[in-house]
Amino acid sequence: MASGTYTPTGIVHHTSVDFTLRHVSEAVHLVQGDVSLPVIAVDMYADGQAYAVPSSATVNFRLNKKDGTYIYNPALGVNSARTTAYIEVTEQTCAAAGEFSPEIEVVNGSDVAGSSKFKMIVEPNAIQEGMIESSSEGHALIEYASESRKWAEGKDLDGNDVPSSAEQYHNNAKYWANEANVTVSVGTTTTASDPTTPAEVTNSGTNKDVVLNFVIPRGLQGPQGIQGIQGVQGEKGDAFAIQKVYSSIAEMNADYSGTDVAVGQFVMIDTGSVEDPDTGKLYVKGLQAYEFIVDLSGAQGIQGPQGIQGVQGERGETGNGIASVTKTGTVVLVDTYTITFTDGTTTTFNVQNGRGIATVEKTGSSGLADAYTITFTDGTTQNYVVNNGNGIASVTQTGGSHIAGQYDTYTITYTDGTTSTFQVYNGANGEGSGDMEKRIYDTNDDGVVDNAEQLEGHGASYFATASDLATHEADTSHITAAERTLWNGYGNKLYSLPKFTASLLSSGWTDQSGYYTQTVNVTGMTADITPAISLVTAAGVKDDDLWEAFGHLYRVESAAGTLTFWADEEPTEDISLMGFMIKEAT
Image 1 (cartoon, rainbow, N blue to C red):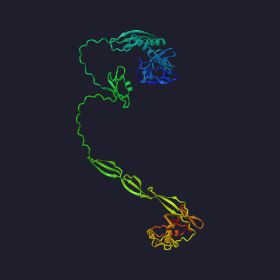
Image 2: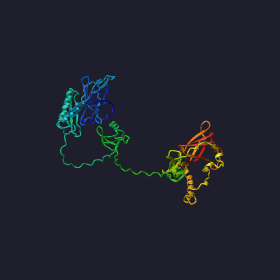
Image 3: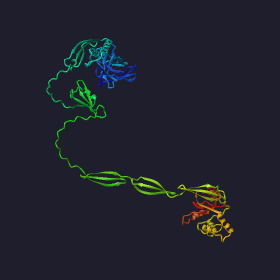
Image 4: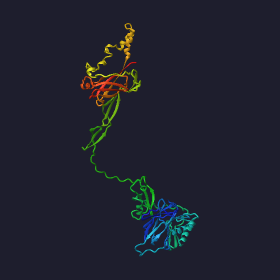
């Protein structure tokens, strides 16, 4: 018969075999006199890969002992994957002490395969008195003989018809009987009168001279007879009930011999975890073991009968309700509310509100750009910049070479990307030096250099305005051609350019051994431009120290993009200057 599934419950010794390779496996250590409690778990491989025994195959344990006796027993069974065989340690297995090399046999029909051997060491028992005598043991031979007997009659052990190849099983039994030098003969054959009596084979001889006695179930059922009269109705059967719940299948099997579950009653497995696949499995207690019925995991149970109505309980105390909910505080965006219950107790909870704007403040300016900071109600801030109007982004020289008597062209680029141009006339460099004290150049103390108010010795009122010139040019009745030429010469002789600014720092002077110099950058300045310079002071403020510092300046020289100032003493004040670029027209 094919080897069934078996779950070991005793002491398990592990080793392995291979049906293709011959390798040294882990040794199994036993003690002389061990019986039944130890179980040998043999992992089976073929060419190094796990080998699953066919479902129709039988697994046997073969061992030749040193005294000439042998062990040839069927395995207790295999694991669910059929890759591990469980071998019972019988009293003959450990009857003799020493080192042995047993093997595993797989029989599938007429096909037989033997495995590599594994090492089994049986240690001598400390007490030798009463030790069982070593002899042969061939339970597998008895099974083969029983099976071959039935198959020779055209039936298997369950009474089913079998093919003519039953002779192969008979031959297998004879083969192993001859191999072990065992004689097998048939004793008595009895047909059981009770059709429920199972088939039975017993050995009335010895392990070496086997005499098999057979008890055979009653024959096949005959044709159906006529229907009999209806019998008396039997008593009502018990309702479905689960007699006991086990925490594992192993616990259930170990408790089979217990008396709290009768044959035919149901038990269930509950491991305590709904993720465990064994939870919800339903078993019924059979004649020899628990038999699996169904997995009830997730299935709805059978509805039980309705219970009787219980007695009415006493009236409970009045419940506690909510009397009021009141807002009792606010911190930034968090509002606190208090719940007052009808029994006078209270509890609080908070509500987080959305973020709002608390303030918007101007925090700085740079040119035409103003910086603002938004402060939100949650305390966070955000900055942004507002650009005002159209300012000057840059002034760049785009023509000319700062040559005296010629014009340089400059391009103004505004902050909105538009541009405009203007020209600067480069005048000749001045010669000599003079007294640059204020008492000389500003005799009336009005903050403007005296000569800056004059043009060739004439004040502004001396010259005509632009509209006067337009009218004068159109009216020639009272001016001669020579006078017009002379007058127009004044207009073409000088060309005034936009003003510039410069700052002389008190820390920027260089000692030149007797005088001091400082050079500053001035956009658009060329060597042929004559700068007209004045001091810049705060409106309505007369700063004597600043004027004194300005009075030490006695010379200025223009160059490409720079002005260099000379001072007879090192000024101790920062001097802010404003000037005009002037050069003679060509």
